[in-house]
Amino acid sequence: MNRTRRHPRSNSNTSPNLQPVGTPRFRYRVRFAKTGLLRWISHRDLANLWERIGRRAELPFSMTEGFHPKPRMQFPSALSLGVESLDEVLDLELSEEWPADQLLERLQQDDQPGLTIQSVRQVDLADGKAQLAAMDYRVTLPEPWDDAEASRTAAAIETLSKQDIVSIERKGKTVTAHVATHIPVLDLQPDQLVARIVTADGASLKIQDILDLLGLSDWPERGATLIRTGMTLKGELEHS
Image (cartoon, rainbow, N blue to C red; front, top):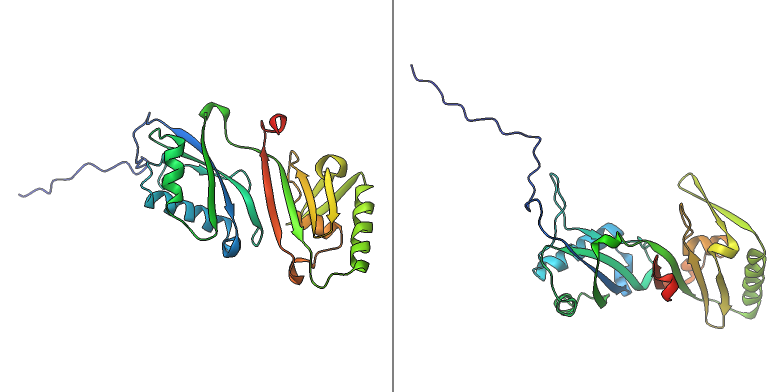
């Protein structure tokens, strides 16, 4: 009688990790700008774009574990759709140590329209993940714009600045901010509105929230452009 030889059953609970345990990890902090048409891609698409750029540059990514390994990349703050940024942060990890200037040169060779890679520096894994401390914004003025609207906007800023606490509803949850602490800068200039938002322990305000609180929700529809001009990470405040 012929007996069918059975092969040992594989353990389906074992994750097919792409890198051996103990593979070294080296973290690099990339500062970049996201402008033009690129402001209309989602945060997920931005992450996918960076993964493709890294693969085209043949970077030795450090991979996550599990059944669906992904390159180790982290953004401390997701940018809202339609908002430009002159200063975004990405932490990525490699399994080989590269000189930061070599990594910068390799990334810049991709020349993705709307993506300007400004700097790369190596950071210590022991410092933990990048955490956002504050964001700076400017908003271009809408059309049409006249002295009457400038006066109304200035009055709205003054009223908001005198409040102790403000709240907005976002996805069924209430986000509360202390004006003096979390909106330390809010100023109407001749050609733009500028704001600085300091992050809270929980959910933090966004630039669109500031416009909503001022009664300026329609500015983007009237041609105003929202631009994040700077990101300050925790640990950088004392050096800024």
